[in-house]
Image (cartoon, one colour):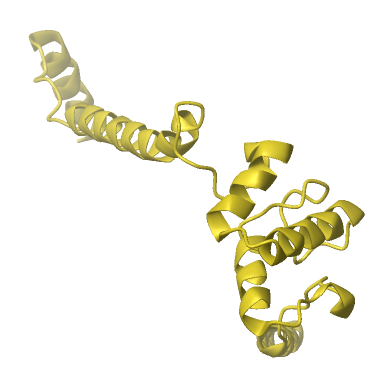
Length: 167
């Protein structure tokens, strides 16, 4: 009997702790792996470099941008992006240069091409197939719940005998 209030109090305490941690982690800014020595002196060029870096995947970490990764290859890519910008390349030229060297996998959001068509259409296809499957199962379930077949004469006689025995 005493355990219920204690468990309820512990649940409230755990919930409060989780909410506190979540709110604190949301307030902390993202820590980037970009070192001060890598940054460009021109704020406009640095902003362009950050924008480009946000589109490029770290080939070591795979699910981080090159700005977020501490890997040596990510550092090399960040420096390469900044060198190309300093040379006067446009954003598209920088991205094309890196894709030409490292392949399209370096892009966090792959381009639409015949090679990536399945990647782009698969989510919609899965949703469509799932909806069709749900519709088929729903219709099958509805027909299974239809009225039962009427009793034949033998079943009626047996039911009458059972009801008669109960009286």
